[in-house]
Image (cartoon, rainbow, N blue to C red):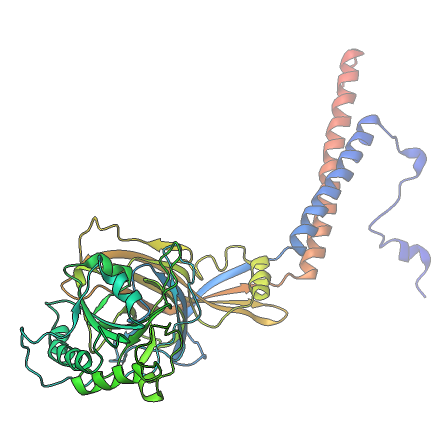
Length: 481
């Protein structure tokens, strides 16, 4: 057996008898300072251990979420009618998706961006509108010419007023004109306005009376509107309610439509025509007209992960537009890419990285207004650079997957119809933000280093201070050493 004496010889911490030690005021002061320093440094180290740190790396995009990317948007146009507003998608691979409607909703809005009613229903579009073969004869006019001075009088005089809003320079207006005049003459002969009075076919030249056309939110030519007596309910914002005709434009189809409108009304009736009791065939080509001149377009599209463009513009296969009068000013309520992210997921991610999500919807709340200083035919374009960002945690793995983007906007003039374009390009790289794991052993090592370091430094300072004071006392007493 090893004796206790030999075992004690390996003691690193030999003790000095208490009566051989001396306590000093300087030593007590340094001891207090050392203890406070240890507590402060321990608290700092504990705070650092409990805090979350992250590292950021940039790698080649290895997404496994497919070849398509979801693009959500909510954009309000101040002067684009829902009647003609269309959403198109193009990309460098040759994709051309025109007038997307399945995932898009449209609402008529006033100048204050407030919705004026329920969702605007575009309805089924006819692939080809039939036009008549009649020849334009200037002398053979059967429709009544309306303007701002007599429009309300005629609207109140006849239960049904059907108006062709046209422009003389418009190809489709000139193609409609002979059939319209022939149909108007036929209706006038069959239902004399003086004796019958149930219906009147009329026309408005929008180049001569632009204010009247703007009042009724006419943006494409020709626009055929059906006004029913008593259905116009105007308030301070000029809100009204009538129908648009989208059917065939030959004289036979027009006459049949007019007769279907008249059928529910007895001869000589001047009562209100508030209800549409015409047959179903007519209903297929009539839809409620936009109740305001603006339109809010909201929804989403799925685009390929290649450079492309989202285009919002006025589109119609049987109408013409005056490019000089079109204004594509818009307000972006929301624009983002990728899957929808719950507020909780964003909140959890922000606890790790406060700056995350700042560029997820960078254009939200921004307006792009053309005040006409730039002239006519102004297209507003946005250039978006998209980067994927992933946040990984040590506990649950992938916490967040989002797409952030930078945006630069510009305006340009063109001879074509003005549009609003959103050009997007996806980066081939992605940003990965990873939560760093803290080692408990590293924390214990640092705590021991703090205690030992402070104790050692305090001991050195105490020895220096003690020896200095002894030296000063010997000098005062005149002792040599």
